[in-house]
Length: 176
Image 1 (cartoon, rainbow, N blue to C red):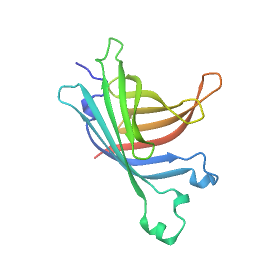
Image 2: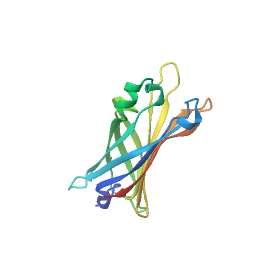
Image 3: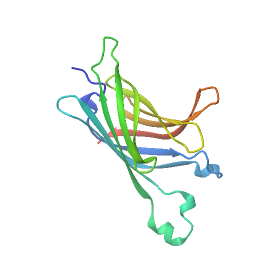
Image 4: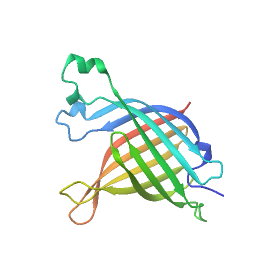
């Protein structure tokens, strides 16, 4: 049985996560990079996998006083439950994700649907923005040599039903 998240990816990874904050006025504040850790586990039966990650961020707007500066960065956590079918003849399979993150998606678990091929996956879901059409979110994970890339995009809806993807997170990890 081949699952869309290969058990060879299991283990602990460390690296750097860059948060893209395109809405900030000061261009120098738009990219916030910080150390990040990620752990992947695949259950022994090959039925599902779990991706857990942590990253730090302290928005400049929240650092208004010397006391705020002393508090330091805020640690955030995220978790992705990965479930999917066996890989088909083409080497890919449908995959579904349940995702929650203490900063991006703290109030509910988002459901995302996509595909995986054992060493990479990509899935998208939608979320409500009161007074606006549904927005989207995409999560991607992939291996490039000895690097593990974990990426997230915010998807802005177009009037014609199309999507414009905006980078939200770009992270690169190496195995610990």
